[in-house]
Image (cartoon, rainbow, N blue to C red; front, side, top):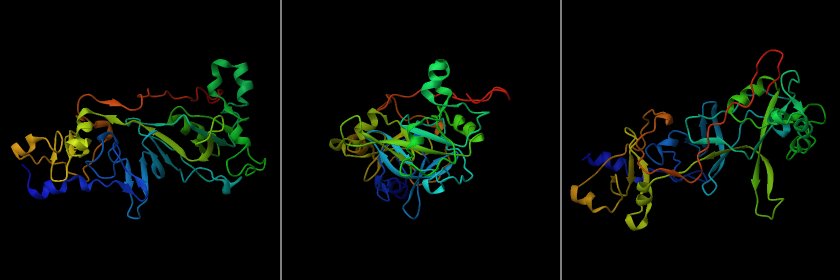
Length: 311
């Protein structure tokens, strides 16, 4: 049994459910010991109530989170914006921790500006694919619809800069592209409630997909008939814990065994214990995901020699 102070520090009401106007739900969290350990220390809520997404390349403002179609929308303050026009600021590539259950969404489109034609294959994609079908995915499409219709500012480049569209299958590809291009921007296709084929509109930002791990322990914990707890974990062992109003348990809030044995099993919620998501273990047997797990994509482009272009 833990002391009352430690038990109180672990109560579920310390798991904040919003940051600003953005809801925070399982498996995500902004308080340590809440949510899933797979996403530990990923989201940060500033003192000003602004939500940020933490990656190896920095912190990025979060605009929205969807749990029905699991994804996070972030913006990259370093990427090109309409008001920049032909002025390209120093940029750095957005990257993800490959040990997490996050992935760049296929609904993203990346536009690169003023790329070196000596190092990057810049071709109209349909023509290039007809000539080299085996290398179709390697071209940066200079005839892209988005290059010709930049969202919100179709004439921003005024013909003074080149543009091509390429989807990096790994963050390493994005880094390599930016070695040979002046800047980039990311556009995602937002689904709107209209009939196809016009059911998506392009907007600036980066969509990051994530998986929702589901365990029998978590389902029992959240069941209102069993006390309606909050799914969390022990910050030292990463073992599952159900966070309840009065105390925490390894099962569910109204489990009669808790009263019988006087259990007060503690999560150390709200601590700053250092932890890598890659080391998350012990989250319970029987894990499955609401989205199919994606295989790690290989690097899509690289440099073989000084004479070869990026492919």
